[in-house]
Length: 446
Image 1 (tube, rainbow, N blue to C red):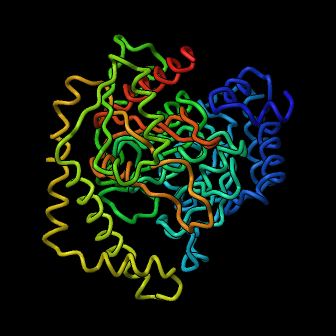
Image 2 (image 1 turned 180 degrees about the vertical axis):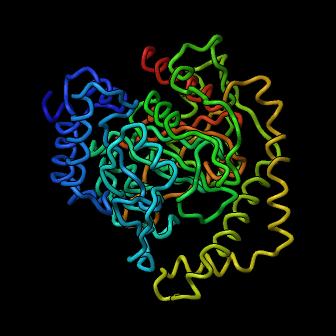
């Protein structure tokens, strides 16, 4: 296969091509490294990369396959890792100078799981400062004058620009779904606790969730299957049998899915006018299987999420301020100062209200398969605005611990806009199956 064909492969396609001998891991990694060399000077997606090390891993993977040994589901496939995940082979700098010399002797649990499945760790991708809102150097590969989103900026840009078939990210408010929307790719934030966070930077233990970027629903399901396992070391991880998302997500729904279009209280203030029109067209196209639903109390959920993240940011990053306040950006210092002033009573109420807020959605899921809502307020903002975009359409679902996926289904003025689907807790497989159905349904009807 030619280099330009190899970089177009999804994770699933690449794994299959290596398994049946149509290509090798070395050829695949070489193609992606060439793409990175050609493009990353403009895009700036990578924090650290070691071509020799990646090629050495690939050659070993090819040797193992040549011996006829059993191989994992990701054997020989390169994956990128957001630079807040501990990795043995690469430094972990968190987008902050205070971590310049930070090193660990153990991979994060999810990175270790990817390696066990046969993946090649291609390198570390750029994150915003401590995975918060200060813009990083990364540009949107589809429009270099625009933001790729944050905080998983490099991961989204690398996948969106065909530098790697998939990448890990994390989400505390909207750091997976928003960048996926801006970069025109698939992004998935599973149910809180489905993937272990051991070895991942904590900024808000109540909210932090491991997520991923890829170019198909099948890839999201496969990657999640490889990483999901109960981990007693992570307090939000929960016991369960293996979910087998790949099998379920790739199947046909037993019944036609139904969609609850939820604008959320952010719609009037934040939704781009062109996006409003696009969503109305989508709902009209879906017709009788899509209803606009108003969910009472979501304004409280938005505020609870804000309070929890602010307070926990201050608790976890406050020691960095104490160590060297000047090493942090003005914006981050201001955020941490604000978080330190959150009243204890408000924080406790916000923590205690999460299950109450989720219970309020119970009746909705008795009627509808998933919630349909924007993944971002509109297209990616311009870099000159100095922002990574608002996570206002994602944060409430993250707070509630619900799985959500961004699907690249819309375009406004030549720029991608994602459609976000949200499912019930621990019902990730049905959510991905519905997302796959929606993408196919729209493709077949246009």
